[in-house]
Image (cartoon, rainbow, N blue to C red; front, side):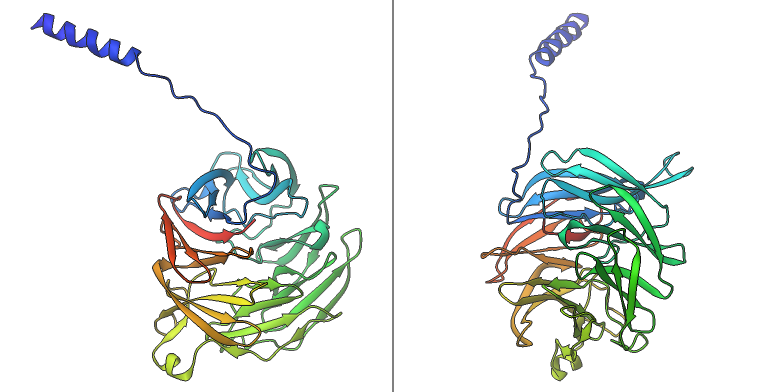
Amino acid sequence: MLAVICGLLITSTIAFAELEHDVQKSERLPAEAGPHWVWVNDINLYSLVNGKAYLVDGDSGRFLGMLGLGLFPTKILFPTDKNTLYTTETYYSRGTRGERTDIIGIYDAQELKPIGEIIIPNKRLTGIPTEGHMAITDADRFIVIYNFTPAQSVTVIDVKARKTLSEIETPGCSLVYPTGSHSFFMICGDGSLMSLQLDDQGQEIDRTLTKSAFDPDKDPIEEDGVRIGNRWLFVSREGYIHTFDASGKELTLSTPWSLASEDERQASWRVGGHQLIAAHAANQRLFVLMHKGGKYTFWDPAEEIWVYDFEKHVRLQRIKAKHPATAVRVSQDAEPLLFTTLFGGSTLDVYDAKSGEHLRTVDELGASPVFLQIP
């Protein structure tokens, strides 16, 4: 028996010795992002201090890279020079406690390696990311970050100098939506919109308030707006599209239009999800997550994606979702892909945005994917 055991040990040792070592290597991404690349932002509910973002090629479903972004990362900012990526990140000196440090993380866009950081006031809103948590203004002039302590304010960062320039108090108004190189607007608690203008030093030089753009008690708008040129489109919880035009000195408000007919409303069709609208600018298409549910189900996952001509205000198509979805985005090329994911799930669904055909599902993608971005 001892001889048998010794023989087995010798055999297993030889077999182990013959195994090849895994070789780890990294590759640089192409200088130009692929038209069908998509970033999947994961707040990682099972370990909130370890938020991540995954880069996926929608054509193949191939995983291309990852960023580790600390506690409650917001969206990634993509400057026009395409060489760098910016994020907001929060860390504690003892992991989950201790001294808090907030930064703008700066990453090489091809190697996805950190190349710098900007220390910012530790006031930024930490929570499930939305379009308005932070923004980069046109021409890559400023990064603006919404703060909530619960006092409301905006931190202004000089992108080129990589330093904090100012903090602007904005009581009663939240989130940031760029409208130019030196301007952005915010959504206020009474349903109005506040536009702010900055000088070259990042100091406020003007602010204006619109009349009420929506009724915050009866039908508030969702925070996930989409920008099309000088216009921003938002959807209300009752399924009306609100358009805010920043072409002039002041924001102008258009008459809201309905996503559903009266019969569809009677049948309980309504918007739902977290990142619930997406737009293809060239094709004038608006994609909206829809489900059947009661009045207070506006965060429930979608069963379908409804497609509209956002200029003519007419529905063109209904796409049945392969899996329930709480986030949607569409690529901006001539042959666009449509992407959806489910908050709390771990998959990314890919569709042909024109036909609505489901092309593939990417599995095992993080713990809590919540927010999608097209670089």
